[in-house]
Image 1 (cartoon, rainbow, N blue to C red):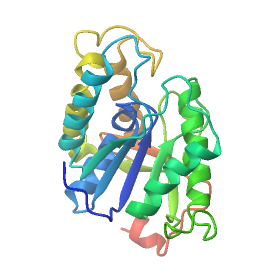
Image 2: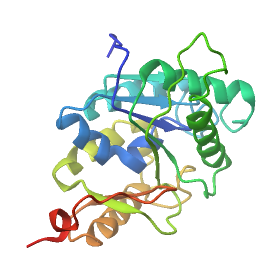
Image 3: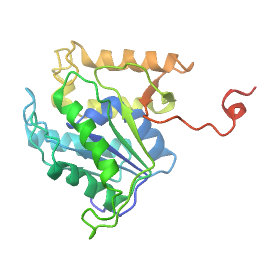
Length: 239
């Protein structure tokens, strides 16, 4: 977890430690197991959360990243509860994108009950575009990932595709449970990130529902803003 090479295939961005595990932990575990290099970026340390100190949450986040098979996990140290969409923060995200040059980046779905999730989605979306502008901070070579995949936390209002994560779901659960300050002894109490009682049960039931859409035990749904290319429908739906 300490050695950072420049290139990764996927970077997952979350507002708080545990966001990417909740929304896309199965996908990240699957891609890492398939040999792809993944990185995780938390925008805040979750210091406004009712449970857990920033120090404890950092330790939990690093443990969860190791479970998922991430190459690294970094924190941009933006203020929890006050993520602002401005040029400074957009460029913080854009610099990460330019440095590690992923093909795919992940961000929270833009319609959510938590303002930090909404603003993280906006920041990553704008950074995705601006990272590709050659005249913007030209000392860092411009680079734009191929796609932004939006994962779901509180709301799911339509999706573009569902990934079968059944084989890797135990690893996702282990990564979520690594955030013990949030899901351990407090696991049956409402969690701010989801706003529901029994958040662990909520996550599993949601992922079972998403998996059922494609005939799988567990799935994770994602939304994209552009059409999903299918080169050969028979490779997807053939007998």
